[in-house]
Image 1 (cartoon, rainbow, N blue to C red):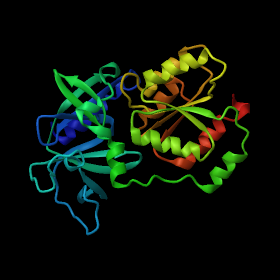
Image 2 (cartoon, rainbow, N blue to C red):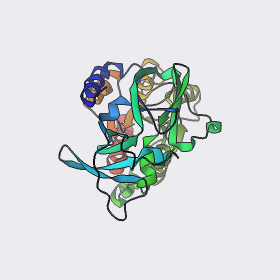
Image 3 (cartoon, helix red, strand yellow):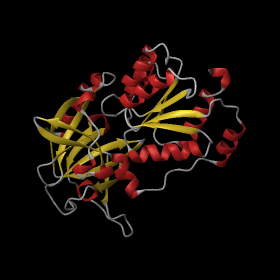
Image 4 (spheres, helix red, strand yellow):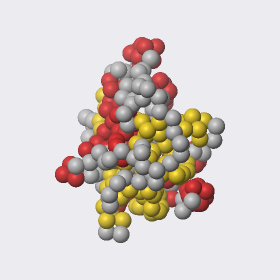
Length: 308
């Protein structure tokens, strides 16, 4: 499949979003192991272009190159996941992606095809598989193991310092009357969960954590039966195994005991299709990762007593 054909194919897959289904671009990194990445994050697949490497670049950066008039970094994804580096492999491919409003390229050995996966077919990887935090989900494709790369983990290993919450917002949070000061954070990425928990700790807001939409929905239903554990707001990733953020939001809106909850979809996925789906599933807001002050302001607004 050529880069242009891939882009055309990506556009045709947008109908899957919102139905707990996802299209994955399959590729390899040096052996027979299949890896996947959500096609909504992919802009193009190219042969490895000539790259520039400057002194002081991170060891996982293969260099940078000009992509449609913009200089973007290129990450050696094979090296990041423990394989032999691809920086000097002329036959390598470059997957151009967009995460959290920024563009970057990933070097891979080759790319295979696009497959459709249901949320139920994706599951959290067992620690015995040895992927660590570098993989957020696994599934089976034609009987073979496919590992979904946790790109947020890879990016954090290169630029590990998350943006800090401004002092102004911290002060504002301290003076707001919020009751209760408890929210639920739903994200399959360990890095993302830690960042969010640390963010809300600065706002004196307690976080309950779930690793996917199914775990979150089960916990919410249990809390609905108790008067002791009340929350008013759910902050959920979109791309998750078992039950994605869109399906979780729909389930919340379809459950009488839960439909009053505020829901913020918080994702590195980009594109105008998000805006329409946020409305369709009944989410209150969509915030692109990772904008601490904007997310904090949104949470403060939605948690005000007058909005409950």
